[in-house]
Image (cartoon, rainbow, N blue to C red; front, side, top):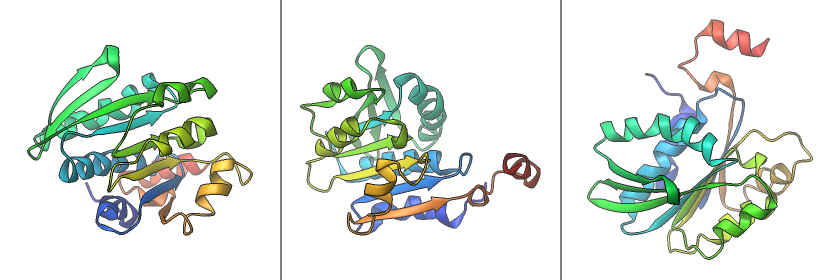
Length: 199
């Protein structure tokens, strides 16, 4: 499948000097799959024996919308994984390295308690605009390993949303690469499908 320039920019993010990536914009714009693939590849290329966080609004939605899509693709890249569903833990081996990925749901204010005390080398927050601010801040604070990075994707509800005001508008100050996606940035969508979504 062809990929767009912004999807290529997600894949290139690990090789830039930015410390975090924000991919925001339209649904069906192809940002989520490229985010998780780039996140995992970066983690496996640069770390061994570290912990990472993959966060969504709920664990169920992460498994359904992200992991079920990405794990077969990683398998084709040579990855081997083992999942402990009771611990929401994915152990992944790829490129001669082994790392652990914890899966978290950021549904409400109490969710921040689940993430306290863990040290991450990186965290990906899928649909970050749907998560409470306290959970997001706690997840970011957990990334204290040298070389750690933050990965966000979202579709903010509006210009008054805290993540839009404090992260997207302040991306440059926070040393973030911000990529704004439209459906035009997903070449896998046919023109008819794109027009249907636009209507």
